[in-house]
Image (cartoon, rainbow, N blue to C red; front, side, top):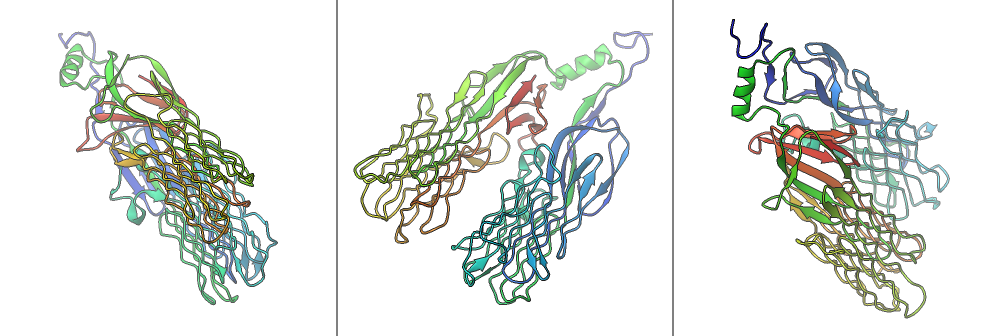
Length: 587
């Protein structure tokens, strides 16, 4: 009997053309679709409470774990546990199958006196602990990639000007409590590269960012703000209560205000998202007629060559006193020359790391970022910012790179590092700004260059702004990358700090004691410049590589932190491979 080119029974393919996401805001049960071979997941635990009593630590965010291509049994059911946020304790765990995220640690509490606690992210230190006491550890128990970060330290010894450290977040440690204010909550992490750009009906009020740490409480200094991704703010009011973490984000609660009777904010409950990607599966034999029809429709996985767009961002430079330059920005999207890939081939991908900030006191240059590489495309790491200089008439110039680092605030003039070095066309970046130099204590370092603009000049009394980055929607979401770090302020309170470059640039040191911040992870942003004799430069942000091909392209990414997604309408018909760490693209 004729059956289209084979002898024997035909097992028709199972086709699921659409990706679906199931959101669990409370514990339940997940049942996979028929034929579904694997899923992507987000598992966020409940956040820890902020410390109660007087000016205490923020709660740590619940553990944050994501993964792709997690093998499952089709049509099978899996229990889902969504951890609760805590009141005056650590949050509870969330789980899916073998994946468990640990509840966030509670911040230091003085009623009764209890140390900050470890967890997915750790709680912040409190006012009654000795100056220099660190916050509690995050990523406890340890998993890879890490599920969180430590809480912030208490760096204040004055008895009437006190504050707690911020709780750790999914992508950053909690801020330290210092004379300028209580510690801010550590930033959470976005899941938009995996589950689609905001808005989505399952994201809630934080637009796809989860697991921010709670801010520290304070007395006679500003309270710590909550970390992005649902962290609650601390209080600075007499007997004031900390703000609760946002429900279903795993955000940590804010620390109580002063006076001894305030209550730390409760942690936010966790969330679990399960994505079932589109797939085609042949459980047995395909007929030649089926193959012919799918080829004609353009839905048969090709092994022939196909063209891809790319975005390759290198690691940002570390801040010295001048801001770090952004990592090189090279892209074909939209409208540029694509790269042709051969099917059945593996392509190594290098994602460059951010450079380290200059050492304290800020007399050393920041370290340049590392290159990112895909095929024939290399983006150069951002140049380190120029160091400060205590010797008169000596310059500290910014370093060359994808974008150049800003000149340091030496007593003589200094120049920004060259951008687009080595040269590419189109240009991969811009130069850092120059610093005028002065013997005044309020002189400022220059800003690092960004993808679309040079860094601003450092003058008396203002440091230079970081150069702006460039937006790109290759991932399906409009995201700005490769902003330069702003220069560090001088040693006196009269100095001012320029704004960081949009696209992940770090902010320079603000006199008298607010430290520089790092460039944002996976943006290639330059680190902010340090200043004076107290604060070092911020580290550069790591780079990213994104590759966009036709929906019919057979693409996979490893290791598991890297993802391949199919874009929904109106950008449907494309697959996007996103590399946040070095790995391999297989076609």
